[in-house]
Image (cartoon, rainbow, N blue to C red; front, side, top):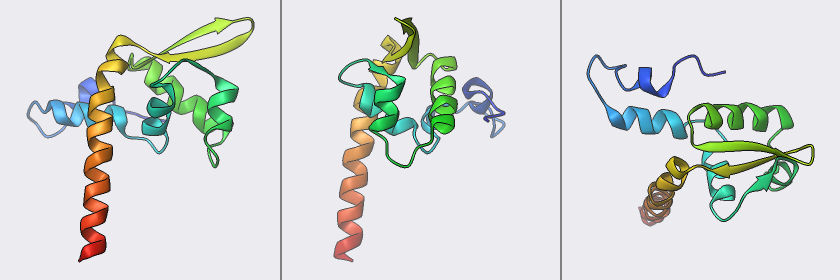
Length: 114
């Protein structure tokens, strides 16, 4: 479990660094995938889990808990099921995540050419 909050992380280098805050929020093996899965619509916990082979129920719950605490994802209970969706702050991350995905694709293509 994360021991440092994104706000605390913004000052981890003894200076204010909002980039570290952003990286802290996105860090985690499954967080970027969770955000991608929630870009289009809200999802139940079980649907998220099924769409992420290799992710355990415990890990998904931990990652969602952090995203909820960071106000990126909201959790609602509907008919005894947890439903997750991006908050307005989470939606504001979508262009950043998409840009990082494009950069990663271009980077990997560059490596393959080398």
